[in-house]
Length: 465
Image (cartoon, rainbow, N blue to C red; front, side, top):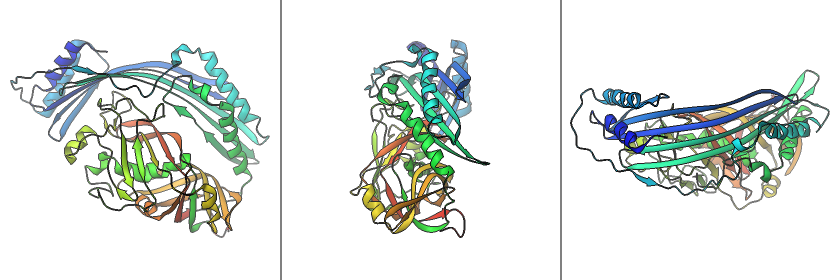
């Protein structure tokens, strides 16, 4: 971390050409990634990444520069070059900077730091997951386990007098099981994680997640292909929330709203969803995968109401885009590392519980698709148009779950889906994922209770019923 006198000199150099805001972001990150295939460690990488980012704003223009050379001369040089890109002429100004250290509320306590655990114990954890998945059923032909942990220390200072330090520790294990039947293969994946240290594995039983990954693969290898058409779709809780995250959440980030490229721009106070839909982004949930003590601009993390009873109530806003929109930041400024300028991003984003049960939703559906686990997909943030794979699906017939089906794809537009959600259950749960955008790849929780969309386009095989 940098001494306060050096931080002050960097900020003053950044303001030397007339910029009205300067910021220094310092990062020191240790991470470990282990991969196991076929019960043997395939690769293992541990490393440290240290660097400094300098951002200069003038009105609604900004310049961002970064370096991993932390010598005083270089840092002053980088700040002056960034300042010159904002305005070429150095001006004389009387500036006073006062750093009052802010001690953020620690909502993500860490008990066992990952570096305190020897690699053999991490490998043993992976082996337990491997054997639990591999021995689930004879059709499981391969199992891959990926272990990850990181310990990130950050220091943030800006010309408004903000000075804050934070430490983020995250741990995650991903298990993928592959089932084979002749030339056909199907996979199932589960990847639990948290903003916690190694004590995370005292709170869960890794074998349960491994067996669930194997169960998905085993079920789908024996399933026929899904039919296609416009039908009601029930999307289960937990990672089912990826549809809201991708198709709607990104369009509520100021990154796109400020540029008017979002379908939800200038719609505060308007009805954008069914009245049974309320949603929040909440970075304050203790030890949740996407939670933060402070964001990457040093703002305290918040719980932000996005949609209330179908009405748009708020956006997720960072400092820069907040300037463009003339609204305050909401604690949503995030970046993958010092190599990225921050922007507005989701933390833990989910639809709030409703008044029904999952069983009631299924029982009231005469015919449709039940999407138990969602997979990957693609989204156009400007329009909200998306397509998502269903990793595990079932047909619903006469109000009951019927045969499993594979190969289903959900196709639609986020704004249309929000309006067609007609039932929301009371079983809120969240799943862990990595979210990509212009400031890099970041940990984020997605979630929802079980919901029903009255009609969606399901891609499958024509003629199947």
